[in-house]
Length: 186
Image 1 (cartoon, rainbow, N blue to C red):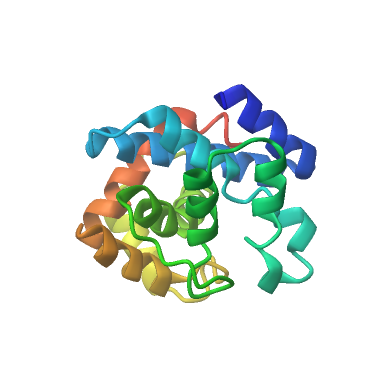
Image 2: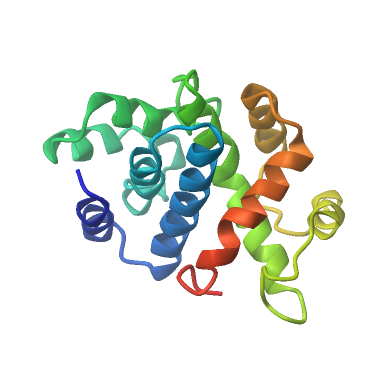
């Protein structure tokens, strides 16, 4: 599957522009981390695009999230390793598919983190990630009312699974999102 095919498939199942922007943000972060791990950025990016393919179909019943995706993806001829990765990002929330590979661990971690970083960028006077620093995100992290839908425990647990300090995961995700901030609606 190409990036264009993955994006088209996501758009067939997700109409809200915010969901498309999220897919593109996770794609950018996944591609960035693939480079850090000397992995295939195209594969990792496609997983990032596809990870929430069933969200609009399941958001009223979030416990079904990641359970509708396998059928959608299999019908599109998507490889089982990608399907497993998509399911693993819901580990402990809506699936029991534990993230085991570096790709899966990274997706599990940065899915939530991209939302926190984007929100932190949007409340800056510049409304940009260009001048967003780790210390600003860490300050927002401590404010439980800020981006209250972001599960910080998942991010911490994911960073541990990645065997990377949380500060490094946050900083690398900021770096990953800067080049695509316009593409993701900032």
